[in-house]
Length: 398
Image (cartoon, rainbow, N blue to C red):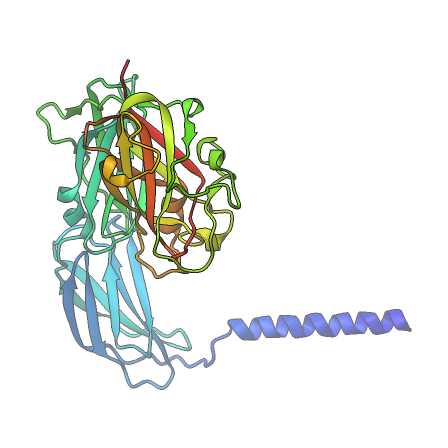
């Protein structure tokens, strides 16, 4: 009897499930009358597209309005918008030639109105604006690519180099929508090299291949070598901080992203966090890259992550008091957040940038051996700060 009861309950359950499923996929109404056509259509051109406004048909069962057009790939495409809005945006056009867009009203019975077509002329596409801004210049160990993206369009930029087989090879692809960006290709020999870039958007538009603005399109990477961190020695000056609080000073130089140097303190602060290191060789620095901890999401651009720091150097140790006036100022480093979102909010691009670390170039050819970092500000205004890794490159003096 119990088995029969269970079978009956299962049968009722599946019957109800099927009935609900069918109901959810059936039109709310089932008339065959087409909606009224879209009227009073107007448009304004925008970069790579148009904003279209119209009068919403006075049909009680109207569900949505759709715009149908041919996209960049030559395929029929459509954009839909609900009846609660009298405008629709069409994006993705790669040129400024005239385009045909047809508007339809669709009701709850899936009846489609007669089309009303308009001819539109979009403004220049975002890619055509980005392309002339992209430049490629020689940099330490490779080349640096910079560009402007005033419309904040999501793009992918393929960074390429001609390999030893004579073919262009993609070494890195950057996904970004930041207004201003840059990226470098590194670890390449100091020989004439062909670099190139290609910009793509989400609509199938592709830029021309972009090369360096030199007569032969070639660039020679500037020479540098990575300093051997096994040679680094700690130097403790009077105004240096203790970087062994909740960490280990040597965690900054061990190529282990899970260890770190961490200063003490709590709450908010406007002071500085300083450490000094003997690089073990005399060198003219070319660049530095610093990383901060990211074991948890809230540590990204938080928990004492340095926002600004100043770098100093000296060929011989000036004195044990650590007076910065006795040191050569090398540069100020301001880290950045691509999205510009407030503290606690992160974009994918923010996470990628923070994980990669922040890299800075030295333009001043100064021979040094002793090196100081002075953290002047953290992202969350913490009184303490942390650094998980420091890598340094330059030209070593014999």
